[in-house]
Amino acid sequence: MVSNHSRHDRDSVSVSGKDYFKELGVRTFINAAGTYTRLTGSLLLPEVMHAMMHASHDYVDLDELQSRVGERLANLLGCEDTVITSGAASAITFGTAGVLTGMDKNKVVQLPDLTGMKNEVILQKSHRIEFDHAIRACGVRLVEVVTRKELENAINENTAMLWFLNTQNYQGEIQDVEFVEIGKKYGIPTFNDAAADLPPVENLWKYTQMGFDMVAFSGGKGLRGPQSAGLLLGKKKYIQAARLSMPPHENTIGRGMKVNKEEIIGMMVAVEHYLQRDHQKEWQYWEQQVNLIGDAAKSVETVETDIIVPRIANHVPTLRIWWNRDKIDASADEIRNQLRTGHPSIETVGTPDMIEITTWMMSPGQERIVARRINEILKAYLR
Image 1 (cartoon, rainbow, N blue to C red):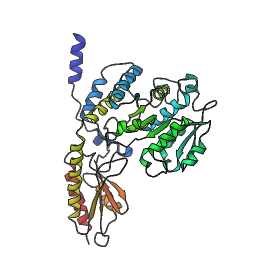
Image 2: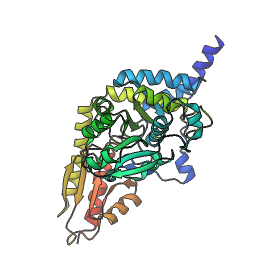
Image 3: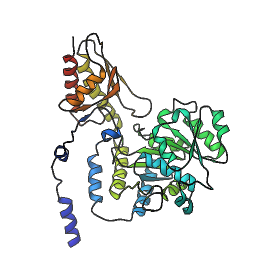
C-alpha cells in the first residue's frame, strides 16, 4: 500500500514552470532550419517526455532493459535485433566495434589496438564526411574507392566492413543495392548510416530488407525522441557483438557513450509513435505551412520561391526564397541575420543568395510568425 501511494504521489508532481533558459540568458528561437545538432535537433514529443519521466522513478538492469526493448523494436521493424545507442554516431562506433571483435571479450578490451584483427573499412570517396571519425575511433584505416572495380580490388584479408553514407547514395558510382550485393559476394558486412533519413517511415525497414547488415538512425531528428539517443538495427550477431562495447561494460571504447534508462524508454516510445502517425496528413500540414510562408514572401516585389523535397535526408517540403538584388538591397545572409537577431529569433539555413525554410520542427502557429517576419524584413530592404 505504501509503495502504490508513493508512486501516485510521484506521478502527480507537476513540472516547474521556471524558465531556465531565460534565467541563464540563453535565447530561444523558432526552428525554421531543421534537425541540426547545433540547434538541439527536435522537440521531444509529449508521449516521449511522459514515458521518460515515468522511467525515471525506478531502477532496472540496463542490459535487461536493452534486450527487452531491442526485441520489441526488432519485431516492429522486421529485423533481427536492435539496440538504443547514444546517438547515430555512437551507433556507427559500436557497429564497427562489433564487426571487429565479434563476441570475443578480450578483443573488446583491446580496442582500438587492432593487433590480430582486421583493420580496414572500405567506403566510397564521395561518402567521406566528418562523421566517419566514429569509424576511425575503433582504430581502423579507411580505404577510399570510386568505382566498383576499385572496391572489389580493395577487398582483402584485412577488410572488416563496407560503410555506406545514405545521404550520398546518388553521389557515388555504387548505389545502395549494388553496394549490398558486393558485400554479400565477398562475405563482408555492410553498414548504412541513415542518420537523418526519416521520413519516409519505410526507411526503418527498407535498408535491412535490402540486405544491409546494420543501419543507424538518429533519435532526435524525425523520430522526435531524445536528442542524445540513436538506433542501431540489423543482424543479431553484429548487434549483440556491438553491445559488448556499450555500457554497462566498463573496459571498452564506448564506456563514455552512455544511454540511460529514460532515453532507452523514450526512444522505444518515439519509434512506436512514429509508426502510428498519419504521415500523409502530417505531410499535407507541412505543405500548407511552407505555402503560407512562401505566399507572404512572394507578396514582396521581385521575390521568388519554390518548394523542393530533398531526395534523401531531411526528406520534407523545403521552401526556397530568393530575390532581385537590384530591388531588394540585402543578401540572403543579411536577411538570415535579421531573422536570427529579431524578435522572436528565427533560425533558417540556405546559401548566400537563397533562404531555405522547413516547418516540420515548428510548433503549430509559428509558421504565421515566420511568414510575417519574412515579409516585414524583405519589405524593409526594398529600394
